[in-house]
Image (cartoon, rainbow, N blue to C red):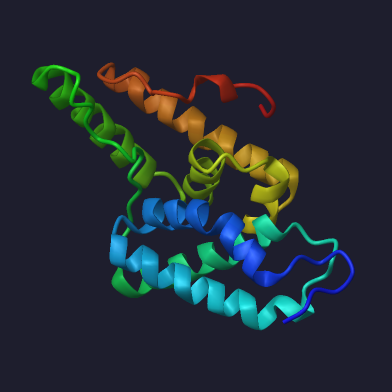
Length: 182
């Protein structure tokens, strides 16, 4: 397949984004094999649609959207949900007690995120763990930029409220997103 004018070759897009999209799928599906299968399926779907894609499109967001739709289809078929928040659950340099406490905190945050409404959960993953811009999130979730920002904000607000009530776990890595919508 050739590239037209400013449109990059498809294999260059795959090489550039495969690792980050795999991590996103893995966080969504919590299963290595499912994430690999969805990644392959998403890239096949995107390959088949690539010639119809506008040259001005945000290719990264477009790939995330296809991958997210593929993961949601798989999740609805298996009736599973889940997000794993850390690629590394234990730091061997820490004492075992600290590792156990960190694992408990991760599990509490994971459960809280799983309880969020679908769009808030997905927007939060895309923003905090995949580091997508609000413009990219709006494309992935088929909403406005304001809608993407509001979903992240509302998700964070619900998490903070839950952990303030529980007074048991500090929400890690989520504090800087408190402005913008309200």
